[in-house]
Length: 79
Image (cartoon, rainbow, N blue to C red):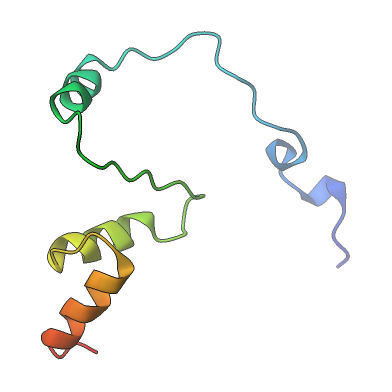
């Protein structure tokens, strides 16, 4: 069956709309303000691309980068 625009989800055919108002996040802002001066890593990808998985691996291996995670996994003979 050939792929047509009729078979695509309509939200994939146009950019998402900007929200009219910002969402208040007072606890997040307070936490970020307490951590001023520390490094922050933002992970951005679509659903299903492994963001939570990678975050959990780094935490379990006490790592902050792919290089550290691989080295730690080798120390533990996981690789």
